[in-house]
Length: 401
Ligand SMILES: *Cc1c(COP(=O)(O)O)cnc(C)c1O
Image 1 (cartoon, rainbow, N blue to C red):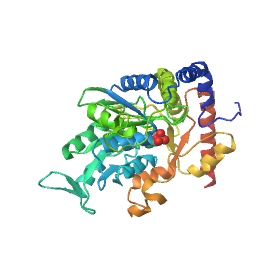
Image 2: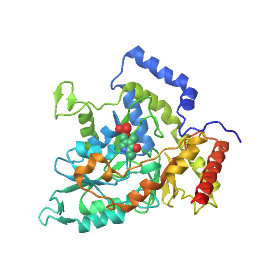
Image 3: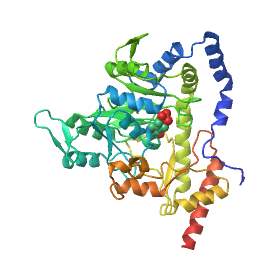
Image 4: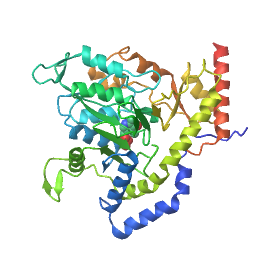
């Protein structure tokens, strides 16, 4: 077996393969000096809306902008509480705070790592009351209104959207999907009796095109999607200083536009996304097979029958994650941890007053998860070596203890 290094993520090869097309985008942009807005941005927005099977896509500067603008556009405001999960990238909660709201959390499903709808229901039933006149949900401890929920489709796996949407409809809460890791993931809705794309089931959704995402720009980029024309229009205002036309500011907005060159790059790469996602699925399936028989040692990702994950990451759980990561690193295999500290325990959120033990499932996951190499182009030989080294490392650690 080869002993070459196996990176956690290879972003170089794909860009070498697409170099001619990408350079052409750059040449076109230079010729017209159309760097902001214009046909490249509009073209990508149309293509991505079609890909997500939604009516509208608004190109934005980042996934964080997309979350913030989507929250603001759906009416989240200063003093609200917005509910999400503790095991996400901090951008999810940053956007909630930037919209003026306070993030709060509910625990996750231990198998999918996504929001547990039962925990959401418990939170609303037991930690909140309803204002009898307005019907608004009020958080008992703070007296603040709860106005929105942000399920995160983590690792490319969908949250249980039918149940989450049903609960949120009942309580009149907005649903903003954090689909930053889930471009192309699908959910089978029993209610709609068909498959839905990530980003098409909530009131609005946020996507990131950070380079390492399944669809990545060659720099910073993001987008929001929605079927609601008014929401799309508000996000268009928010991204461009609230301008309905140049120097006519309907509201105070932000500088949160999608760069035209990045839109051009994304448009080129979007043509390949379905194929890349399919390669990721095959890669995940190969890992699953290679780990069969190691059930007690390695917990592999679980895919419910209602989900088609796009495996942004392939995340396993083991008893001694630190030791395994070190041993893999020693033999040249790259890994990562998404994410090592649940957000309620991170320093930035000390002020929320949350404790160890508040979200035990997310905390346990944070302590045991490890993301193995995953990208289109990872070969089966490389995967065999990764799994062999994982099993070897686990057999030595368990014999030591
Ligand atoms: C990447 C990511 C974001 C933020 O996206 P940026 O484009 O980096 O701002 C938000 N949420 C999740 C779950 C992410 O993975």
